[in-house]
Image (cartoon, rainbow, N blue to C red; front, side):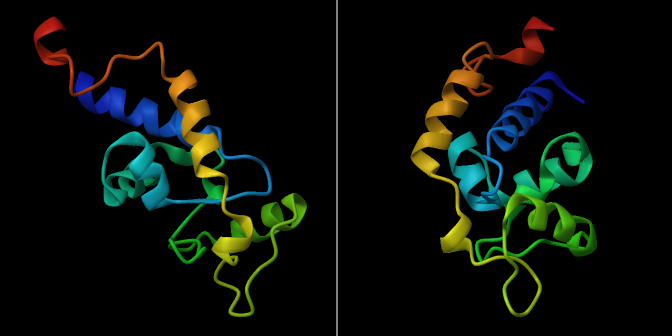
Length: 125
């Protein structure tokens, strides 16, 4: 993985780690905070997200993607997140993290990292 991609992955994973227990954030919300696209967040979570609270990242509708429903349900129950009647996720509006607070905390958490767009990381490697 090149240095720029590694930096973007680290920034996304740090953001996901900050989503509070009992709350969720959408791929789009994480993307907006990190300055990338929602599909990039999804790809990062698919490849590198097993060590962070992946169950807190949902679609804009509060749904868990792929085949992760069964693994997420007991964790959500433990965290107090109730499933929608369709069983695919939660009501996003009821459980969404405070995005302004999440972004504020994320900025502090990535303060030690360079901006991936401001530095030519490949030239300095």
